[in-house]
Image (tube, rainbow, N blue to C red; front, side):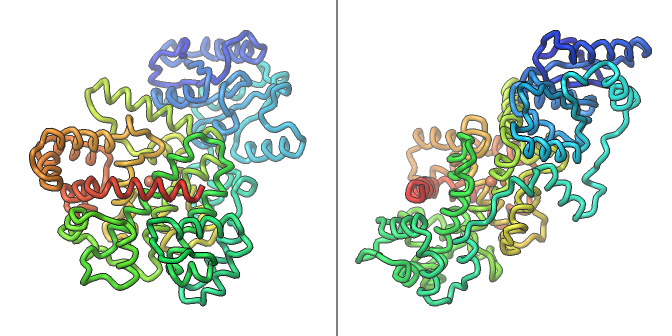
Length: 526
Ligand SMILES: [Fe+2]
Ligand SMILES: [Fe+2]
């Protein structure tokens, strides 16, 4: 709730705290009144009280650059440290700490560590007993009244400085997970290495081994005899398949500690993008498939009609992948920065989601579908940092292949001459969002809403499926689709690979198979 704040047009302080006559708030208000008494009426500094971290985010968006200082008090609901780390370099952050409800950690070591980290980000920290008028006076004067700029600007930094700043914001040294052992061993293997070597790398990791065997013995793979060992698995199913399963298991395991309840939706999104990327890159024409591609294509168990639509679109002919490119793994890991962000900035999703919901409501009031990239919302909150720049810090530390690193870092800003793998993942990301968007939900994201409208249109149609989908896309949703794509700011050159009507038709036709492959895989790797 906002008290006293009018659309300031000038300078605003966000006060994230409980409204209570606590000594530090009384001191703050008193000092602000004093400063304001020296200013002309139009120049006076306003403040907005926000009781929880989501409200800090929505208020920040409402008043944008007018916000000069964010005061995080002990009464703020939500994670004050995360708010401070996210918003550092966007506004001046002052954090008041009540030692009785200490947000910096109970034990002295973690207290000292978080304190040093926040101070390294120019966050001003003070205990409640020290937050008196004399404490606020220079802060309000410098930060707000004389408009001292926030110290760091990522744009003007060298790549190394940027990376260092991002690590600081994430407290990466302490909160970045390390790459699991099996993943490291498997990454070092070559696809042509003998199955025995693969078994050596995986055998000791019983949970991963169990998952591999469970998946390979499922109906999707249809081997005649039971697969009992990793040697057999590699020989029967190909090294690439084993690599995919290991990556999915291992990376899921690391982030399973992330307590956030939406993590399943994250994996559905990632796996759907992985499956779409793989299927769209495979030749659909039997004459154009090598034996491995044939097996991988068959595993999707497509209906004739689905194969026909893929054959007609001929997307694979435009997708020239490099030697190290792996569409499935690239799709699976493209948004790894999102879970890294959840892990390093606990509760950060609440701020992002608060802004998504605010925008959705504004769009609805304007009779529009919401269409804004989450990456832009992240950049707004964290000033230039987003899940791509976060993901690349992790991928760099884990020494992922260059191709995957490029995808992680650039899938939302696809340059015209970008490598095809990035374009493929950008397309697969759009497709994945039609089924499982993240973190915006199915009722917020425009693509599932448009998909729903295609389904409804199909019920009225008398034509057979692909033809009918064509008609519904052209006649019922095309204008809205183009409007949404424009507002999402998606680069037009993506549609040079495949025309956009054909793309949405293909995605809609394939959707049921990708959905079941995704959910099946998720259950089997649980
Ligand atoms: Fe993304
Ligand atoms: Fe994505």
